[in-house]
Amino acid sequence: MIIRYALKGAMVLACLGSFTVTALPLDKLTLPEGFKIELYADGVKNARQMALGEKGTLFVGSREAGLVHAVVDSDGDHKADKVIEIASGLTMPSGLAYRDGNLYVAAISEVLMYEDIENNLANPPKAKVVIGDLPSERHHGWKYIDFGPDGWLYVPVGVPCNICQTLGGEKFDDPVYASILKYNLQTGEKRWVAKGVRNSVGFDWHPKTNELWFSDNGRDWLGEELPPCEINRVTEEGQHFGFPYFHGGLVADPEFGMDKQAKDYVQPEIRLRAHVAPLGIHFYTGSQFPGTYQNRLFVAEHGSWNRSDKSGYRVMMATQNKEGKMDYEPFITGWLDGDQVHGRPVAFLTLPDGSLLISDDFADAIYRVTFAGE
Image 1 (cartoon, rainbow, N blue to C red):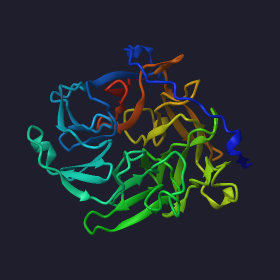
Image 2 (cartoon, rainbow, N blue to C red; image 1 turned 120 degrees about the vertical axis):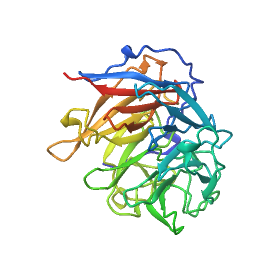
Image 3 (tube, rainbow, N blue to C red; image 1 turned 90 degrees about the vertical axis):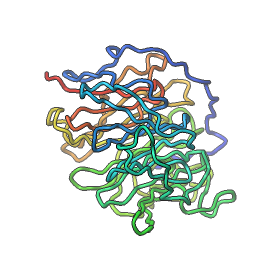
Image 4 (cartoon, helix red, strand yellow; image 1 turned 180 degrees about the vertical axis):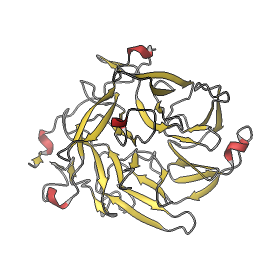
């Protein structure tokens, strides 16, 4: 089934205003039996992507705060002792990655490297630019980055608009937009991993196949229930996932998709509810959770900003069933209470003990999820 909409028939919603932070006791959050969620760190302003250093330092990016944090648990009690600001004044340093002692930070138009960072937390080194030719637009310019199994650095580039043509378009004409790229930092080589990707702010590799899975946020202003947000899978580098022609694999864009065919683009693995804003996704490979959770995909639904009836604000999990399809069910709920927002999950990281960290850029917090037994 292909869903096509005329632009004049699309429902237009007004922005519902700013959010208000309210304290939420963690016992108000609902998890499966045997699981427990605790506060790992607070005061981590606008906490976004996380990366773990070799000595156990947790590095955390931010978006609007312009900060990079180092979260230190010096006594190993799984509670942060201190939060250090190791960089400030950056442009939306949402995404970061750690490799061989160095910290890599994505700041819109460039990727920075801080050498030997864990040995210099008190006096961080001057950043070196390792990628410096990315677009400078802030609209969908913040990034999630990571090193893949192949050793290349993967960098998504969102579109500088809600909906626009970025290849041969009137305002934007650059093939780097609406894509996921990968860089060989030793040679400087760049390759396209995926095209037709509106705004991916989270990805991970399947533990068995090494295939890249990524989240993608659907366009706005087609109504409350359209289009679906997406979880996608790359089976071959260079595949096209539909933007700006199709959304969710089914919804033809009223401006750009009327003469296109859905079959020409890769279909999502999972179609999510409209506007839930999936950000971080993460395949669990730790040893603490029950065996049935091994290789499950966790999804952080950051939450809608322009729905009259809010959606998202929860952590979901996806599991492949016997028919080969993906079952999708809640893992943590409670950050949304009626119309009141208490938190917005962003990204995941599994600690060496198998517990799962979740960042929350709304509550300036990092949570730790453990399994205590049934």
